[in-house]
Length: 238
Image 1 (cartoon, rainbow, N blue to C red):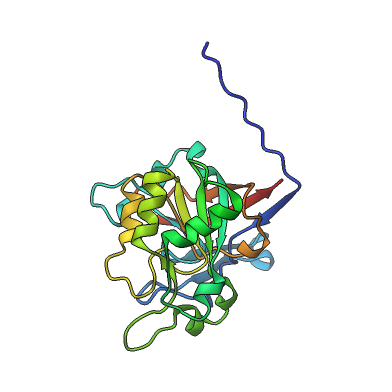
Image 2 (cartoon, rainbow, N blue to C red):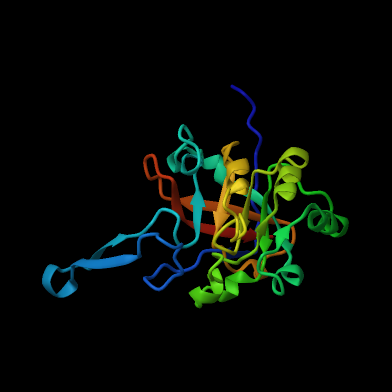
């Protein structure tokens, strides 16, 4: 019998990084609304039950490769062990809050590593832009105008560095896209999902996480062939 490495997860606190889901959440333009319908009630049926409908990329969610690649894996293809990952948090609010079109650069990563050390291979890099605080104001969250949406994201040079030189497992962000709002190519999604990596969007409570040391446990619905799924993302804090 092969020797199995024993992995231990020690923590003092668990923080949810997912927004509650309701019909008022910010929705990507053109995406289906969040809808709830009562199908059984305590008064009439003895139990309470609703049905719900929403897009696969709405609320706090994870994207799947087949959302950008015709032969890509669906959300149900991720093995369980791929969804438990060490996390680092890069706080770029100083750059983004005055510039909603800001793209995270390699310089931002180098500055973070100068303070905290090199990003560990297999990590998920979470980017705290401050946009989580606009969640209850969809107009501010998207910054929509005649040119389209305006919110920060990860730049192409930064994602190339993270994938090629740090071998990260994926990225997450508190905006509605790891690609910034003005992107028309979704290059960051393409780059990460080409390797069956992790893309998390619409995260929250990133301000409550340490820069290093947290472990993410990502719960997705195993939607067969799904292009993504709403996600319950838990951060375990040592």
